[in-house]
Length: 418
Image 1 (cartoon, rainbow, N blue to C red):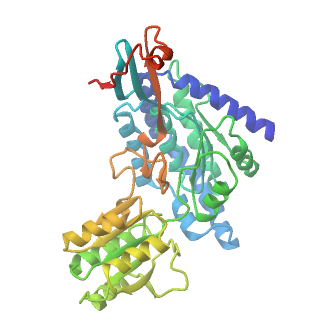
Image 2 (cartoon, rainbow, N blue to C red; image 1 turned 45 degrees about the horizontal axis):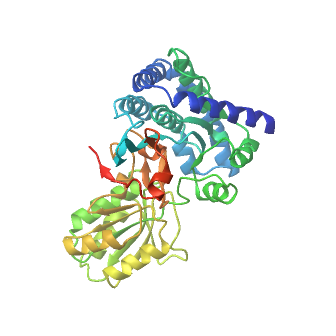
Image 3 (cartoon, rainbow, N blue to C red; image 1 turned 180 degrees about the vertical axis):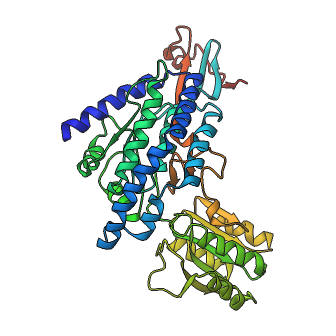
């Protein structure tokens, strides 16, 4: 098993070097081919997903997976439509590779450029959600990265079928490299992936707290992701009751198992419509938990922690203490309070009068996302194409040597060019 994975990683590394030199036209042609092929074979994917759902129902009974995982596993016609559209949308995005981020004349005939480039090989470990494969594969192709995917056992049939169709499409595109998108299936492969820092440049986990924490604790490879989604909404004293009710209901019920669903509601003690707000939430089948034992609970269902706070400052302190740095929002008519909240809450997304469910790469116009990061380095928030690129410095001279500058024979100009 170890040797098998290392061979897969070696092939991915070679593929990453080959796709790095591919032009935008070929990559976009590959993406269109993938979208067309998935659309053509979608019934086969539905059949594979039905097998996984049948097996997953038994896993719920034995406690192997939760109901929220089962819900994420289901691939219906709406998700299929969005999946196909998402791939086509990515093909229409601006080319992310080869962008000149800095163009500086250091001296006559000596020019420095900072240019965007791929990261290399991505290791993706995810649970349930089979649409992750198409999202990440498409983003990897567009950003000229190779990827090794490891999905959960609950979605094995769906994952295998989707990747089979993706690679069928890629094989039809002339000059597109082999082994850009690969997949492993065994649990042992995860441990090997986490050790494979010689070939893998970035690990991206998509799953629950336990999965992400395990990965972060067991690898020296950089990890991009979030361990939990403890999202808050603070209802300020000046909030409009109808807006507050609508936003909180959406943030909790639109997709309760999503990582950007609200988990804690904070209400200012002087908000006059508190009882009316709580009643409206209960009418929408939301279970309210006043003052829970653990303020960092991610329910993943229609359950909401509730706390009354004395001030805006107390709300901010609570969020920065118990939150996960994911997405947090304020409902208020007071612009000064909104600005203070968004400046002082230390999260990847800070919202004013809007549902936390907007924290999504597709909704941000990224085409799709590989995940949401609460990191403070490289990429933060919903991570799309830009988060899958890094940069290199290209220096062009004409026989220039440092000794001339050390001796004062030449001086630097440091002139930024258009």
